[in-house]
Image (cartoon, rainbow, N blue to C red; front, side, top):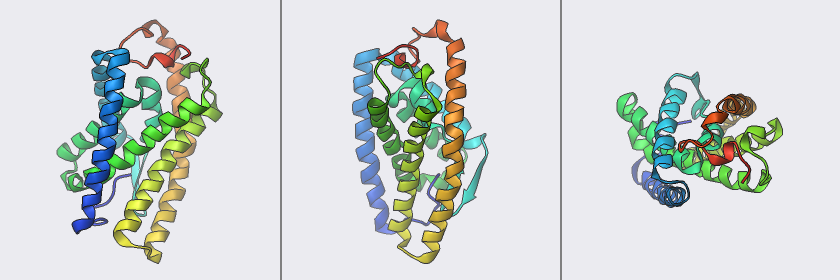
Length: 225
């Protein structure tokens, strides 16, 4: 879902620094709350694991260009369910940065836009989860409908931000709108597949029940809030 070079240029790119700074500040606030509740080891281990997974999502999993961007199976809701919002946020940002430094340096000027596109939907997902998943429900017991709601929130957020950056940078031309439509339609496949991946991971997590007290996993994964 990265923003292609040249879509937003010149002085317009300053906005990406502002949005990235805002979501970064929120991520740090979330991290501080996470540390107070679960300790620094939980944040560090969760962030490291998330970073490694994100790099695999970007570089190993199938991805293909469609319209204004690329379609990736990012599995943001999976990261959230396994590790919590703060570790997932750090993992997404660091995985994106590592990819840029090691594999795609031409994407680094777009880092602010891309990190905004990944993290704002993640925190929206956190809010939706708090509102739609009953307090007495452990994440390993989620149903497909609930996983679909989380995935739809995250992926819709990504499509919305990609659309914003494209229209902001290129204007409301017929070509840009058509490219956005193609991108949005292609992302429907991700919205369908991601809940299945979430449920498969959660089913596997049940086999790891003996690690339920491990600092690196989200406590809500195995136990109600």
